[in-house]
Image 1 (cartoon, rainbow, N blue to C red):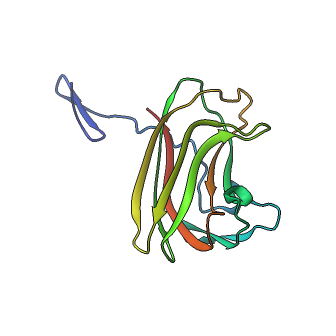
Image 2: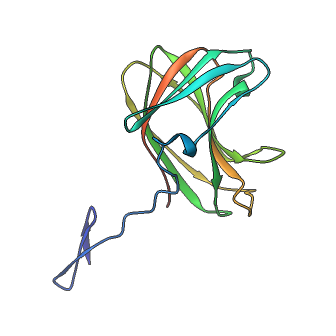
Amino acid sequence: MKCLAALCVVAGLVAFAEEPKNLLKPINKLETWRFEKHEGGDGTLKIDGDKVVLASTKVTGTDWHVQAILPNLDLKEGQTYVLKFKAKADRLCTIGVHAMLDEEDWHEIGLGEQIMLGKTAADHEFRFRAYSVSPRKKNRIALVLGHEECAVTIEAMTLVEK
């Protein structure tokens, strides 16, 4: 068998390899997201075509006081995942990218990174092995925006098993 991208040739027959399923709902739908503002932090979430624009408009010194959540993820213990997206900001700024429980105690479950974004859209990819996950689909991807005031545009976001 020889495979090129999504095309495989087996014994002279052409077959298409199945693309990994995106575990995220479409990010350009408001109902996909939960936007959280805590203890004086403030911001907005808007849809712009196939993109989402997340803005922190008031920060408190505690980064998680403004965050955008992709909830209800059914992640498997010990499974490797790859999160990908393209992102830019209206100015140089830092955001957090986390996989975590979506219930008390909200601990990380394999991904906890900070990335610097600029005015030019760039591709980002994070590979992580999930651990201490919730078996009740109470897992989430969180984009933590409370580091500083900025507007972040996200597109082409996927989460797949590897």
